[in-house]
Image (tube, rainbow, N blue to C red; front, side, top):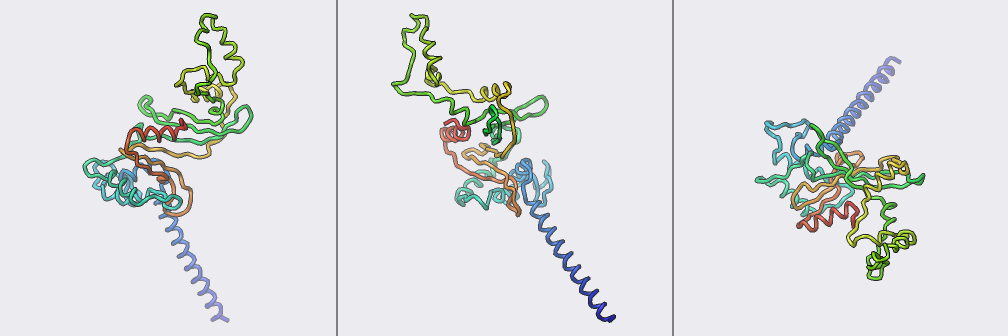
Length: 278
């Protein structure tokens, strides 16, 4: 009987020890994954610039490894989303060659205006659910900085404007001035799209419309759905980052898109596309 009790006690202690060992290993693995994850935007900046060592310790000017090329060469490839995006290896090599150039390395500066946020949010417009994109960027304010709304894109706003640019579009007669512009009544009362009577290069100001509807109480904010950030910080390149909330080492804020932009014309076209100005 005593031998049986001793054997059972031994097994209990053995299983407890094995269980604790597995738990400790799991905790270490989880801790390592959390350490590898880019949990904050600032952390993405630091790792891209080589301002944080492999253990997550912050580096400062004067530290031996601060913005070290070899450290950045190790870090930056791991800042790409490796699970849901298929990046060209040649494209990444070209990007890294530009970023890690020994003479003129490319660094991210939090206070520069070469990056901005895109916020997808839900609203209620006159009681009906709608969604829109808010584009935010940093501007200097006093001794610090603040986020400001630079532009917006709402389908519900854009659909209100359908300017006819054809040769057969409706117009106000060039002799309208001789009649005291009486033609304005027909133009402004009998036309659903009065933008027909504006200049050929007229573009609606959706930010002003957005602010007006908010101030009138017709538009009310509900919630943020998701956020991404766009970067034009590296000459000849564009990339965006998004938050990948998932287990594993390749998680958090990661590069979700990478595009070479060899000309200013292509850069403008890309920005127009991002801002929904096409």
